[in-house]
Amino acid sequence: MPDTLKLGPVELRSRLIVGTGKYPDFASMKAALAESGSDLVTVALRRVDLKAKGADSLFHWIPEGMKLLPNTAGCYTADDAVRTCHLARELGMSPLVKLEVIGDQRTLFPDVIELVKAAAQLVKEGFIVLPYTNDDPVTARKLEDAGCAAIMPLAAPIGSGLGVRNPYNLKIILEQAKVPVIVDAGVGTASDAAEAMELGADGVLMNTAIAGAKDPIAMARAMKLAVEAGRLAYLAGRIPRKLHASASSPIEGMLD
Image (cartoon, rainbow, N blue to C red; front, top):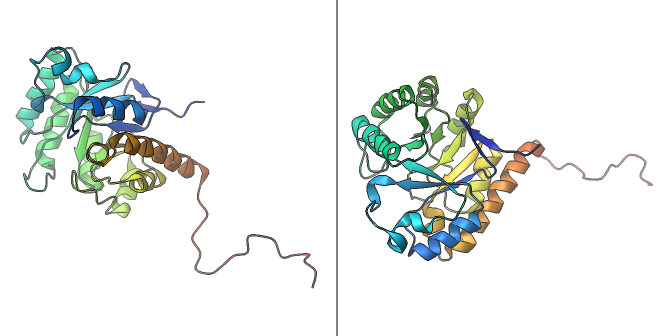
């Protein structure tokens, strides 16, 4: 059976979700998105010129067949985030939304109180909510209890490229969650994406790591392969770590 990722009623072939910000131009963005193999791409509605037409519009450059995931980047209150999701609905986009409610402008860490508040309201209004949150297991549980379709804890601060800073908290979230867990923010290179998947994450969302690379197209392919390799390694089951050596060939029956 295909190893697909299900987010509410949406089924994705790829476990890599990508973004549209920070690319040097629309052409390189389109090429990188295509190379990533992703089915789902995030769009920050508050930072897009919705009046632009044709080649001047970001939407013109989204590869055919990719699903749009509107996000609430730039929102600092629950009310602002909810209004942005209503805008996505008015534009005829999918009810699938990435919910961000930022609490600090410098670190871009989420305001978890406003986040849970917005998530609960949006779920009641029929949205399929994917919340960006910190790596706190308690907040993750509250978001799941509010009806979110997935939990999206950060690996590290947005755009930092630091990789997974707290694998132990992520493991707790993964152990308790009954919905998909997608690591969001902080990935810097392919090994970071592979590590997140090897921990058991159901997917990885990234933007800066690809868009900010010297060669975004090559990095997009690297991330695609890393997510696939990390997922396969997780399903295969790694060997236990040991302090001492263990012969890889049996020694029984060997000649003296």
